[in-house]
Length: 144
Image (tube, rainbow, N blue to C red; front, side, top):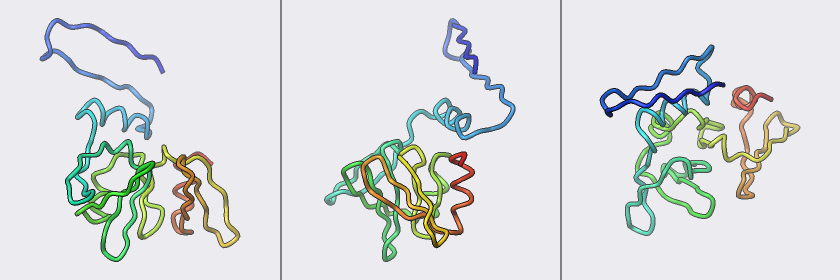
């Protein structure tokens, strides 16, 4: 893809134009960055509210009506429900089971299971299970 930068003399003349055949995940991510910068979530850790950039999230899991957000080394709690987070996260996040959302950029590898499910190995070494009903969509999104 060709990228062109044209300098202007004032910030009110700044604009970005993206010409694409299809609105891919990469195009959506670029649009999100251009429109609002870095997205952050307000999460709880040790009784404190922490603002975390969504790019640090590996996966989000709902357990016993509580929502947990996992990064490379930490676990945070969110007051939001899984479906609310799913709506607000970027295009690189995908539901992989009724109780889990994964950041596609943090998947190291995937392998099929005999039962029709898949197992994803994350960049931090953790392994998570992708339910059968979500396998088709994750294969499509990962170009498998």
